[in-house]
Amino acid sequence: MKKHIARHLIAATFASSLALAELAPNLPHKIAIASEAKKTFRASDRIDIEEVTGTAPDFRVGETYRVKGVCRQTTLSNGELYLGNTSTGSNAITAAQGSTNHVKLAQGATSFDFIFTLHRPGRLHVTMYDLDNHSLTDNAYAGLFLGPVTGQATGAAAGKKEGTPTSGDSYHKANDKANEAILAYLGQPVPPPAELDNKFSAKGLLAAFTGLCEKEGYPIKELMVDDSEFPFLVFGRIAGKKDINGFTKELGPMEPYVYGGSVIGRTETGENFFSVNLTPSSHYPANAAQACRRRLMIRMEMLAAQVRK
Image (tube, rainbow, N blue to C red):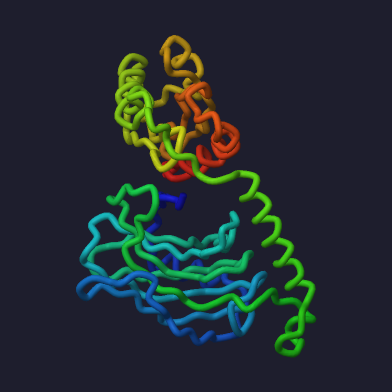
């Protein structure tokens, strides 16, 4: 399940650009890139990469880079530009202190200035996302790939001959095997049962959870159901200063719904964000109950991250 991206939106300004210049490490290498379309742009929308500099002459794991440019668009009314990495691991890149890897898009031209460290192999990309598109699989509108990662930069790697294996190469192969082992353990996404009880359908869960919020006085800001696999999960944001505790008490008397786990927290603006499972394990398909349970917490973490604005 690909993440639906929703993050804190930070506008780039002249003042922040000056601050970034002071925070940026020494980036002596100018990197020539051949941008490749990740998704096709509409009309005159485009992303112009003005300069890429780094602590290495190409994209390498462990090095730091700066990507500057301008995004010009008139298609999205609620868009965001995001610099990411196709790596499946977490924390594939981290923004430098005082920097960011995403910016709110204005109508017209929006400058961007991203400083980050690359931690995992993958394809770097600068992508425009449509935040009004609530698809749980992909809300990318258009974007560019910046180039491949060539390997891990170390003192030995900097002077090694092309094609010579390094300890970094072995490390990444071990990482690949570790990722494969984790994916094998998690199993495949579980489809809903052929005869799904309507109470545990997306429509039924939305109705039940809306009723719970009305009863408990929780003002709903955003409410969605992830029905990409089973069990379906409810997630969103609740306004107000009233704390929630995973809905453990509220779901107690709501048979046939149960408290089947949750991820909760508070946004910087004081709203509660959450993801929660209301489906009892007795409704899991018998031949896939283990995969349902193994994938459940990771899915809830991912969904909560989407609405943690």
